[in-house]
Length: 292
Image (cartoon, rainbow, N blue to C red; front, side, top):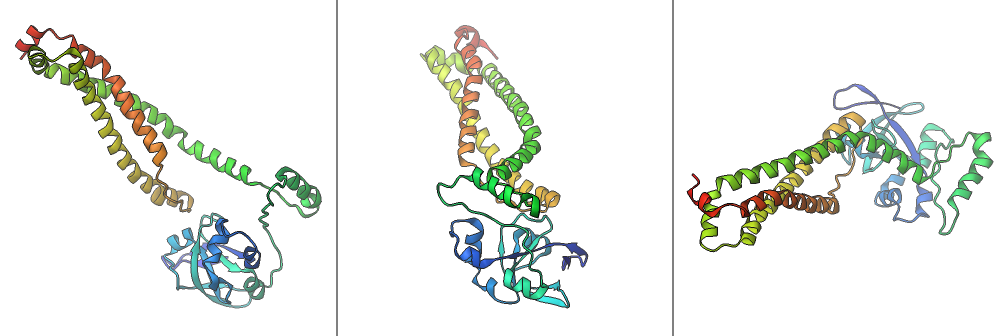
């Protein structure tokens, strides 16, 4: 339906969806939509709607606001009683109880059925049965959850494939930077290392001191990268992706992946520091002491 944006006064094409809330009363509240509707009991009242999160973000709508929607014979004034996570339409979705929708718009059609199977049911068999009974006569398309996830993952992988390649290049450059920094550090500290050897420091102690520096460089770099990465993730999700797609995705902190990357950074920095550390142990004590 056409909706006039209160932000700039321009007309927008938004999605009006009716939901059979009675069916969700018999559903498990662990399901996302059922959980959302369970906390919105007022949605069953006439003249109330829920809006998607991207609708609220795009048009500055808050709970308690009233919307003007074009009805069947007159303009409708409805109250927003809550927001829900919905990715039906990139310009925002308004959700209304099915009873209210039929009363206001006189539309008895149903476009989408969400089917949840009982434990032990054969999903492939159910899908095939639905297609055979209703596919040709009613133009019914059946899509299961793995297919939806697969399509989403393929789309996201295409978006981030270039970013992954850039990460590999950045990682190699960072390793070269660690090696160069340690080489410079060893060269500049030849006198210090020579004095340590002269007063009794063993080669293994010199080796461990240089490797400790490499470990510290990798750890500090990983922590700084993780913090900056979270800021960039927020920027991409709430600004770039929102502007491009019209959807708001939840910000998820990848603690396990972050820990793996941090461990990998420290390990690679340690490996990269072995060659400079080995050269530090091979310094001639006399030459190192006299080095300026």
